[in-house]
Length: 338
Image 1 (spheres, rainbow, N blue to C red):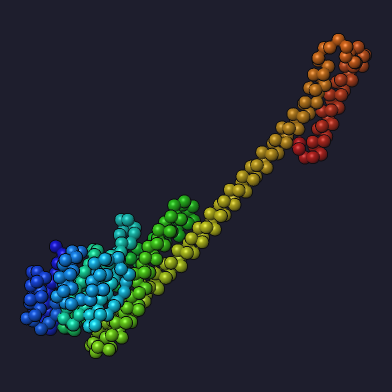
Image 2 (tube, rainbow, N blue to C red):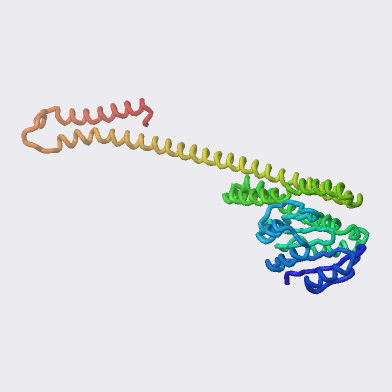
């Protein structure tokens, strides 16, 4: 069912709980209070039904029907339209899940359209109903409580992101190859978190000005200032997280470059060592080739060869082979090949 809860409040107390949207509209006409209608993933027809009853602006309805809106606040005559981006941290998946909440606030109604599991508006309604003196301030009190709940639910998200960043810092120096992908994924979540939270400062400041202009009770002013303070701290944490991740990415790039340099140096040293071995092998091969060449020439056994019948031919060949070997050894030794 899209209709999660609906109630009529008079002087801060629930006086009726209609069963259908049509009943809400009928009872509200009879009571001098305001209605709070909570919808969860309603159909287009249900949204249009609420819009027709409370004469909501068509542009706001278009945004509510389309969804996927940025966090913002817009005023249409005496009606406020807010888009909030609540979030929750999923421990099992170690990721942040973002939702979307549309809030219409008029003189005698509040309509909340929730498209995700968060925020927990049931607890918001329960808290307000337990403090009728606050709920007696009307729709503005409901708006304050919703904003307070959304901001409070950012706290576990901040804690989860902070823990993820700590884990990344450990992975950086452990040489984990998957850390770069995790940094990019976490950076995307932090950017999305900033998109959800940063507009809230301007939205709350705008609400403060509107509260003053429309003479809203000073007690709600104080509550709203407290929410604004919490929001500023959350936004500052998001900014700090993004800077930390940028630093982590820089450190990761530096470490990768350093490892590549070390690997290149090891390869160069290996190449040099192999080159030295090749020189030694080539030198000994040349030394052994010299006597082999002489022996091969005199081993061809042709009938008419010079020096075959020479008395000193054999000693000369031996001496020539030894001399060439020592000569090549001396040359290679001088060139540090041996």
